Length: 319
Image 1 (cartoon, rainbow, N blue to C red):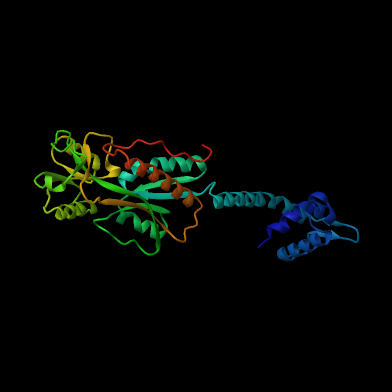
Image 2 (spheres, rainbow, N blue to C red):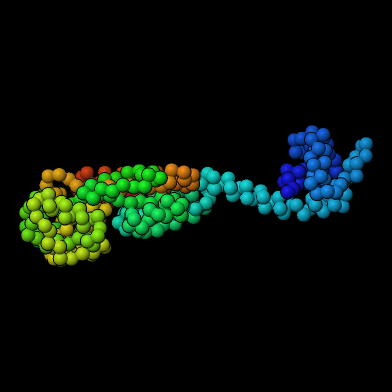
């Protein structure tokens, strides 16, 4: 294989017509230039210069090789610049995956901030439940996945992955505006034992958490509607068709009365999963903005969380 360093030196030798002048331009001694040309001649198996005591005249082969190598070395220079850009995250790609409510409330700000800081990078986003996206992280297809875990339905994440907690969402009651308890600051679940309930599908962590939460209050919830779309659940509650327990990211922009559950405060924890060996320089940037966005949301929940939380979007540095 031809050494690109030797080819660059050859170009200067042909251009200047002198080993000494080529060395001056490149920062080598004349002897070092001569040694490089000897090695290049050995690599191609033919002489490149007509040497005498005082000069080294380029052969036709040397001139042609210098010309033909110009495009190749230019492409190599371009590749080196691209690699340096990818190493520092100026270019390259980042692929994230997350669940629906985080995609609606968290990821838009995060993606916008990453793109603003690294406009030449390609950023992609997929959506899925935790069990659907973990395999992509393990296989290296996805750089990081945002997942959730209910306190009432704990789970173990693969040991190969690093799990960073982004926030703990409170679980709250969603009541119709006309409900007798809609004005209460906190509601005892036992007061809702005879209500119709609305929740996610039976095989979901949210549904299992509701059943366990109700069991702790001494009743079995009468579930009449199920949907994995929280906007559907909110709409059904707003129309007076039942009550629900929602994680904070699903509060929405109103339409229902959101109240605290009296006593123990259950939570849904949001985490970012990524491979410990992942060296993508864009990943730390995304994790930083995920942490900042989630912290801003969580801060709002410490105040009046009866309705959806409005917040200033996070901004990329320098934006």
